[in-house]
Length: 130
Image 1 (cartoon, rainbow, N blue to C red):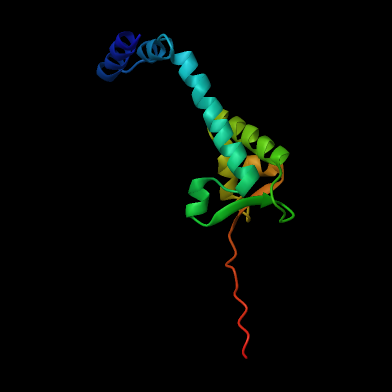
Image 2 (tube, rainbow, N blue to C red; image 1 turned 180 degrees about the vertical axis):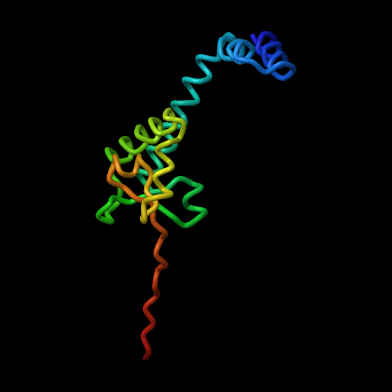
């Protein structure tokens, strides 16, 4: 019911509190929304990392995920990395703070999945003279 959700968001906007936030989360259809959202997010991160080693954002910044040994990330490593990333977020994003102390800038999810994010190496062109 869109009207009930609109009322709940209006109540939260005018008076933010735990009760008004819970009213938004408990509105009809929100459980389906969160389920679909989580499913799409999972597919996005797992599939793009497994197939290309990078999400669209990583591709734009010319970085990618690879194994700690420098190999292409596997489907299993992509799944493990995503699940570990979710766990890091559930811990108030504490798992992301490890990038501040690790010389290779790895997050907790990278340690768990034995992966790291690296810059793409430029492709070299071989020029031969005739």
